Image 1 (cartoon, rainbow, N blue to C red):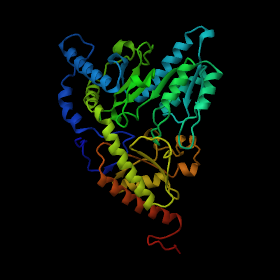
Image 2 (image 1 turned 180 degrees about the vertical axis):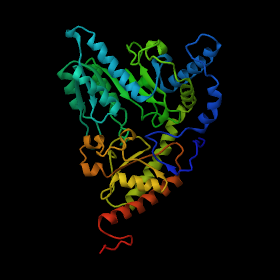
Image 3 (image 1 turned 30 degrees about the vertical axis):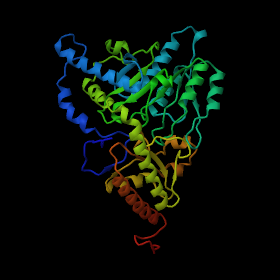
Image 4 (image 1 turned 45 degrees about the vertical axis):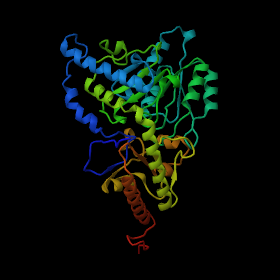
Length: 405
């Protein structure tokens, strides 16, 4: 397996691949060529036929790599739009049915991405009965609770993410899907974090809907995928033209779609690259345990994404640690990028029964295909020195480890 090249950065070491991934060199080099197909894909003249063909080829490569049919994939602007489209479409369809046939309940996990959480919360004032399934401290879904919730009332949709974006914990989505179908509900999974980290075969999973995002897989931002199984009705969230067979209005982002198609050619590499990341992640965690007293990891007792570490470092404020590491040239995070800047601790970690103090002492590290062993060693060394320094301040010590007078 060849080394995977991403655009270089003079800013330091990037270890936040759950937030976004750097653009692959291959995609970057092909962008000028891909930009030449600048026509409107809906135009029937030669200027439209070029980008239409590019999109068709990208869709074909992605469907082959994801184990589904070409026309089961709908191009969107990203994971958030895909998630919202499914939820709003299913709800609107239920509202059109006779009252006796309506299923106005939807169920999600308590650790879903805000795109799912907010989409469902917005529908509650309009009659949605929204149930959230709790998770264990390790981030695992309570399947018994899910089945009881399904048995209580007719349910339209169950939405459970494949893997959590903050802890990397992989949820039992196949079991959740089987339960949903057993009780007549549709099943959707936010699979944004899965792409490029674990192999995906949608035919085997049996989901009705699934969401993906290109920028989590070394391609351009502004492009996503929505898998809609054959036979599923999907109403367009955006009203306008009849693009994407009426399932997503608006002129398509042909450049980003084409770039996504380039990366689709690497989907066959995921298994091998996942093992490389897992080995590197395990080495990093071993070094962190040896060098940083009291450190613990969220979700380590359950199956996790191979690239993700969510650590709790007592005695250190996570935001302060992040800023200090940033100044040293290491990009990590304390949780979801979409929630950065919030003074409140991570809702995901609180939902996992962590205390506020634990949640505010968290740090997330996301490795990528281009992360090297040397970079991990450099990071752990910097992390150790930074933690020692910050803990000394909390304990009233000076820079020499002496009690301040």
